[in-house]
Length: 388
Picture (cartoon, rainbow, N blue to C red):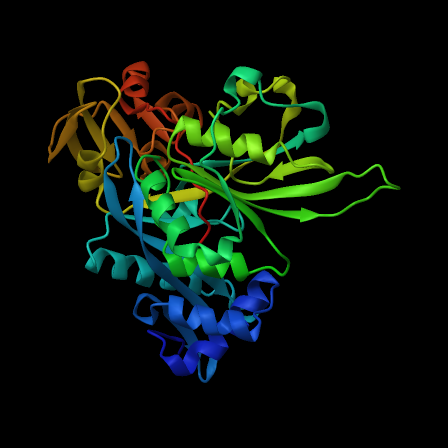
C-alpha cells in the first residue's frame, strides 16, 4: 500500500533526489541549503512505497494580483512528479488532491502552477491564464526614439546581489499593479540570483530595475556578445523607458534575448527606431490557474464594463454584479449566461483569454459571448515573470 503523507526534514534528501530525477537538474550543496529555508514542508505531500519516496507535490504560499489590483492568496503548486516505476497507479491524482485539500483548508481561493508539460494539468482544473513571450533584439540596428530617451539621471549601475532588499521592495510595488504577477520574497530573489554561475549586471531606478548576464562572443573582433535580460521590473512608464535605454546602450552587444520581461501588450516596439527589431521567437503558456473558491475570485477582481452575469463553473452558479470599481458574487440557482469548466475559469479569470476563444475550443458555452468578452476583459494584459 502506497502511503501519502506530509514529509519531515528527514525526507528532504529523498525529495531532492526525486526532483532531480524528474526534471534533470542537480542541486548544489548551496542550493540544497537555500531550498531548506524556502520549503514549507507542511504544504508538501510525498508518496512512499515502503521506504522509497516515489511521488512528490507541494505548494508555496504566494499572492496573486487580479485585474483591478486585488491581491488574493495563492497556493503555488510545485515539485510535482511521480517515479516512472509507479505511473498509471493514480498517484499523481492522489498527490494533487492532497495538495488542493491543503490549499482549501487554508482558504486559499486559487492554486497556480507552471507546467513542465502542457498536456497534464487541465484534468486537475488548471487553465493557462498568462503567456510568456520570448523576444530577441539586434542591438546593433536599433535605438530608442530620441524623444523617449530620458533626459535626467536617477540610474545606478549595481551588483544585484548587493541590493536584494531594494529589489524586493521595488518588485512588490510593481506586482501589485500587474494582473497575473505573484509575490516574491527577498530570499526568493537572492536564490534566483545565485542559481546560475556567472556575474550578473544590473541597474537601479527609484521605480524599477533591470538584471542581465552577458556572454562574450568576440567573433574575430566583430563583437556580438549576447545580453540575456533576466528581469526588467518597472513601476512606471518613465522607469521602463529609462531601463530599456540602458539595456540598449551596451557596447559590443549583438543580440539581446529576453525570456520573460516583454509582455504581450508591451509598448517597447513603439519606443524604438525600428519596431521590427523586437522579434518574438516564442509565445508559450506560463501561469496556469485552478480556481478553488470561485465566488471569492469573482468578487475580488474588477471588470471592464458594468454588467451582471450568472456564471456556471462545473455546476456551481454565481451571480456576478461588477464593473471597474468593484464586484459582488452571490450563489444562485438562476439560468447561467455562461457555463464552463473549472480549468476554463482558470484561463478566463485574469482576462487574458476571451469567452469567445474558450467557446471555440469547447471549454465554455454562452448565450452572449461578446457581452462576456467585454465584461471579463482587462488591460493591461495579464503577465507573470515569476517562476516557482
